[in-house]
Image (tube, rainbow, N blue to C red; front, top):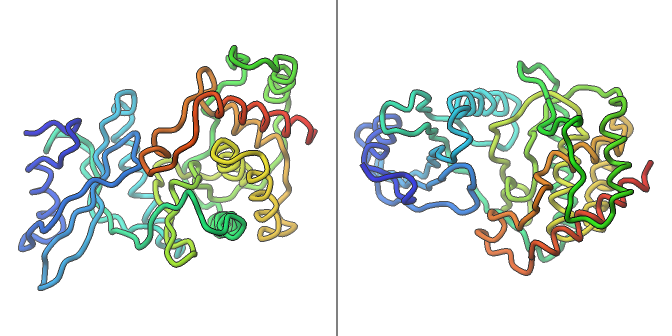
Length: 307
């Protein structure tokens, strides 16, 4: 069997795909989709019933994730069934392989959504508006869900980034994350909402993908996670504009608290920030590790100033 690390779709996986979808089908095409970091994602075209239908196959391979991959695969399948039930623009799950016995990898098959990731929009304001509006729709879903939000970073073990010259400001961050957590109304959250997980078609959001970590929790966590991504990609101005649009569409039910922005910031790997490979894989250029660090510092200061 070909190793999945060679970025191929092994014959055993191809057989599983056909058997899971339509044993009478034939594979017409296979191409790797860009942007996946913790998994390999393929577009598979199947010739069936006289036409070609496209599906997405996801293979989980990243070291450090393998231990939890069975749960992740099962969780995403359950999450996608939940999102489809609530009519969110998400893929339909077709099959999962959670045992790792068929071909040595955890995997899932889902329908392919129309659209593509956009990181350099012609109209950035309209794009940010669309990002915010789509997130509001997710948060309108009631939190009738079995999994709960938790932080990735333990506040008690967080260390001030050695690369930053703003030690005093980061000390304020440390005090905030060790302080009391504000009250919040639970809702359904994506938990990894950012531009590379949003698909666009004809200048509108056509799909939202990567539902491995969906759970119920504070809306501000999704807002904050997207904002820290936007701050790195473009700057504080764009992150703030996204927040303004979100507040506009969410209305008075959303109570903004910068605490969740701070928590989302320290949830990022801040020890030695680098350019996210998913951005460069999708053709986004012009970023360096130094630019990322400068923008993270600037964003952090903007958050401190909100308290």
